[in-house]
Image 1 (cartoon, rainbow, N blue to C red):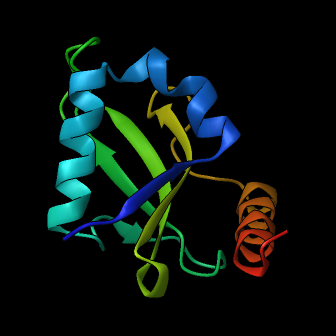
Image 2 (tube, one colour):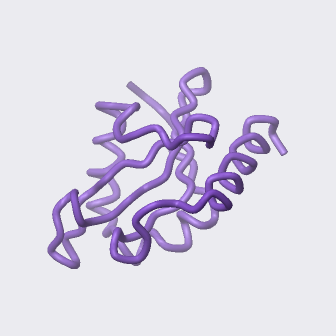
Image 3 (tube, helix red, strand yellow):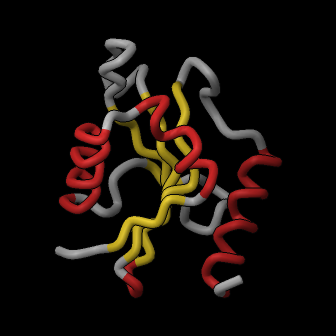
Length: 111
């Protein structure tokens, strides 16, 4: 399958802190194989949270990196919202979920 990966500014800003270019390609390949990987985050309009290993900190998926993304199947696009380490934040707050939902709606409307 061919798809486009769109890195929104928060993801783009922090990606280098967590993933080498090689690891990022592995992450992209993982999503291409399973576009609906991870768990749907409630009240976000369909955003997903997927776990990924953090080799820099020698952590597996369970205690490693979290990526928030949206698989826009009709457009064949993965929209990558943000990336963070589980140690920094385990769950998104209600306000963060609402903010991400609004960002997704704006993206879908093309604004």
